[in-house]
Length: 307
Image (cartoon, rainbow, N blue to C red; front, top):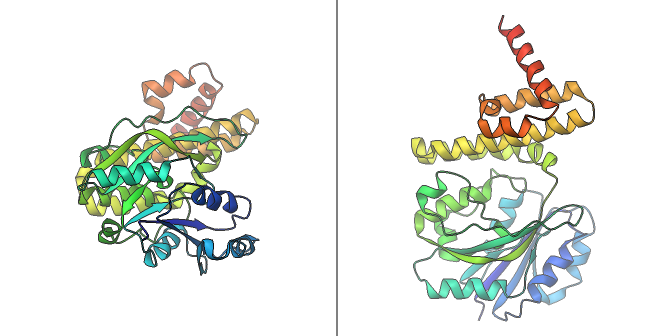
């Protein structure tokens, strides 16, 4: 009997997909199936998948994005539970068994999730996350809770009631996971497993802004339409997060001596959060940095345009 269907979306993941599949197969959890959705890869991904034979089920589709890939896997899943694993993430031993046990013990729970460890591009490990507890609906409408897709195991019937992932989101980390958490929380409570059970490969911070920006616009629109004024705090938190990413890019350009690009990114900061630089915690971070000069230049340009 299949209890859990593990869904792995992959696009041009020849360097990581074998490790991800092996990671699932080595979980010592027999009542599972592995569904890999090849989302139109143009590298050697398909050849690697063929090498696993009957150990995995493969869905081939044209490139439609990570949400559509996960939905395609869920459409053929046979398990009571759906587990998600991104092709460049890793599960730690016992992850699947612990998540299933948590759901079996709480019939009211819609999904289980855990803490995680992030690994940088240079191989350095961050301190484990400490999310602390399962969020209420009010919590999720106050800020992004940081629940990663690779940490989630969800009841399939809940996934279906949610309508799957919204396929407007195409890129990885585009906001589809945060939106799914909101809709799933409408169905019932979450279970939090207070230990890191996944290793998440973190892209460089300065690369996140352009990567996530298309999804931000979709996320803001969907959240505002569904939750109205109740989502004001969450949308503000989202804008501040993107302002901080734009600041990181501005600082990088500044360190490289490119004042013009730094200035343009600073304007982008203000487009997300007009009072970002006035916030005390931001001022304290910038006090001893060359960015004081950057901000002064930005303000002078702003005054010149206004005049």
